[in-house]
Image (tube, rainbow, N blue to C red; front, top):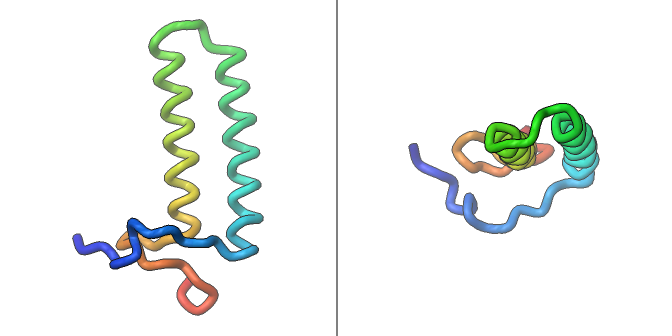
Length: 77
């Protein structure tokens, strides 16, 4: 797979993308807080919480870029 030349550059999200990102972050935070409260302490819990953090990060990427790294824009959603 070839990546878009800007894949490792900073990509400023659009205003709409920022709104969506805030909603996803809030949902991820609530989910992580719920898991943190309900799961027993231990390495499995920490793995779950890190996985939620990773999923949140990839959600942010998916909002701003296509799979090949091409930026999502109003013209290229």
